[in-house]
Length: 129
Image (cartoon, rainbow, N blue to C red; front, side):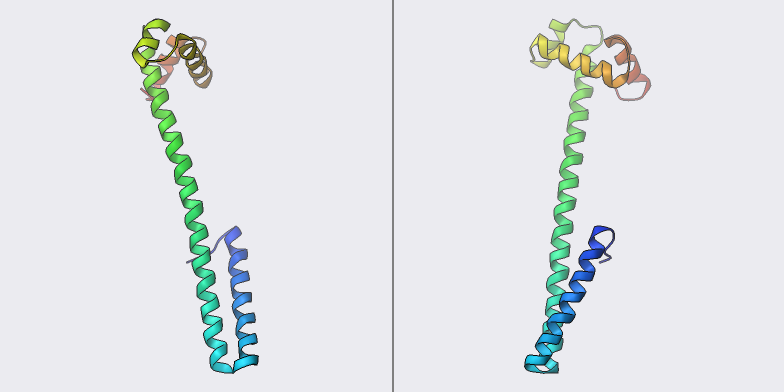
């Protein structure tokens, strides 16, 4: 396992703790205890670093999954817009007309267009629909 970035500091701390634990064990119990304690401390530190890395990865995956889900829902909403009235879109997506208007405003802003037809056209041209 290679420690980079903020984890590099953790690697230095793990090594320092392992050496310190080994020295203390060596003073108290002899050379064989020193190696055993030092090795055990190193392994514990590496396991801790791996667990922290997994937590970070899970958090990143969760964020990515949420972004992908949000994008898929936005595509579905934008596809429903094509030539339909706000009432038609609301009925198709089981939403209130006010919610549909809010979503349309958001889509128009994200596509940097002036109206919903331009937003749909921009989405198609960019391969989002």
